[in-house]
Length: 124
Image (cartoon, rainbow, N blue to C red; front, side, top):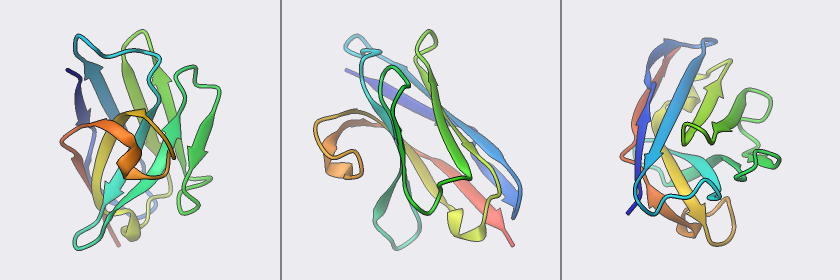
């Protein structure tokens, strides 16, 4: 089993910053897993935000967050981060951490393990 626990969400004004964390644990968790962040706004589907390979050498971002968000990981702590800068009201969503992809990184059907999510609210 793999457990993913997100933290760092909250309320921030437009233009502000937040850093999300996702701590992974469990007997079967491997630092070789790719990790990702997705988000889901009310009434919308869960959308891809960013992903990172186990080594950290490869990252991928949704066009909507390129240049504003940065994904990183600390394998010694089994933790992945999402630094979010220049936040916009349209970034408001529940942000989910995911681990171990078996296909297209941008598809939520590819990821095996999910956290419970953390709310991010950006006020205008």
